[in-house]
Image 1 (cartoon, helix red, strand yellow):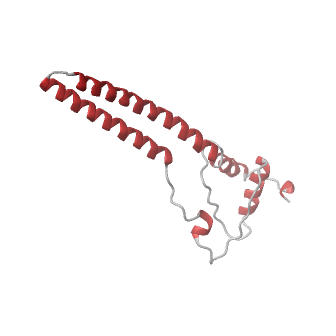
Image 2 (cartoon, rainbow, N blue to C red):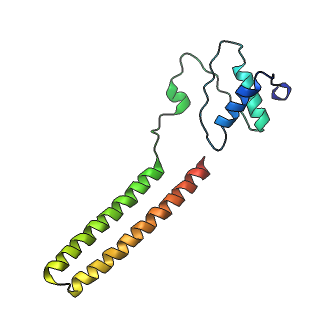
Image 3 (cartoon, helix red, strand yellow):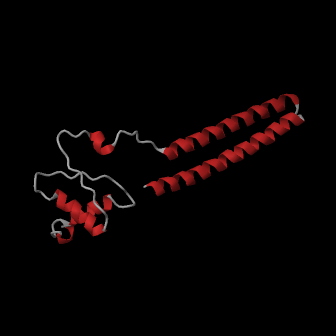
Length: 146
């Protein structure tokens, strides 16, 4: 079993690199390449045992498709999408504010224009706050999912 696995001194540097790559900080995939009985499975089992993490082994066959391993879902950067949405909202509010200010210069700042400017300024402030909140919330949600 995994408890009887031991690393040879020459394997320690490779195992250290593998452990760092799959750590919580990086979460990089690791591809092990080698001929039959070259120690790929033993290295993964040793790493899982050393980390006291469960190991899910999936037998691979030549008939398997990559989508069976990786799934058929599109990789999406949710944080980038939300931040882009918040930035677009802020840019729209800024454009409306500029347009209102330009109109007010041409005809004198009446009460209706002043109100519009105040509302758009408040909207701009809220959009900026939303960008910060979304960045934090999405980061937390992605961290919790991982």
